Each structure stands twice: as C-alpha cells, then as structure tokens.
Image 1 (cartoon, rainbow, N blue to C red):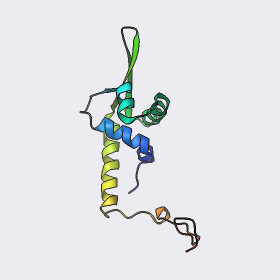
Image 2 (image 1 turned 90 degrees about the horizontal axis):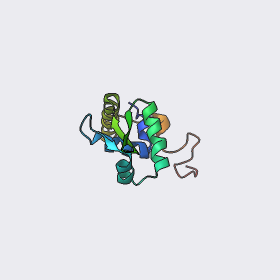
Image 3 (image 1 turned 45 degrees about the vertical axis):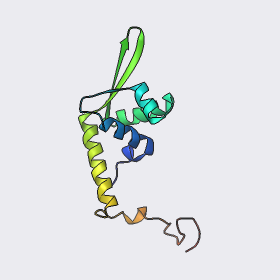
Image 4 (image 1 turned 180 degrees about the vertical axis):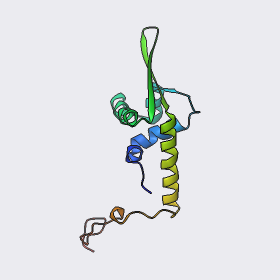
Length: 118
C-alpha cells in the first residue's frame, strides 16, 4: 500500500482535508480557502493546479457583478482518492501496512538517518 504523492505533499494534504470536510457537491471560495490555510494566492494556485490536473478538484470561475470569483470543490474521484489516502495512512500508522524497505530511515550504505555512520 502506498500513499498518493499528489495528496501527500503537506500543503496539498491540507487543501484536500479542507475540501473533504465540505459536504459533497459543496464549494468554498478561493479567498476563504486561502485565508483558512494561511497561504498566498500564488502558493494556493500552484497546488490547486496540480490537484485539478489529477482530476481531484473542480474549479468554477464566475463573476459577481464585475468581480471575478473562484469556487473550489472535490470531484467524486478526488473524494474517493482522499478516502483511499486516509485509509492507507491509518493502516500505516496502526501498523497494518509495513513500509517498503526503501522508505525506512537511513541509507543503505550504513549511515543512519542523521547522515552519520552506523
């Protein structure tokens, strides 16, 4: 069992968790999500693009009067991906899913996780 790298990045994990907390088919405005997570416009936009490219989120742009507004939501595919990620993480943390050998701390050259010799 592996963790989805598209979700596992800390900022994207926070975005996905915030969107998963919404009811299905609910949306949050870009500025509200930005403020909730304490991100800059650029940082949030970059991570949203990665999640949108993966098919995990839906971006809806509209105008209110003359002001553009962007709304975000998980797609059904994104919600399922987040649930798979969450289940894999719970299994990993509860010891039900062993880590692959190449993801254990320390290099295979005899050094420990601090970079020193064993």
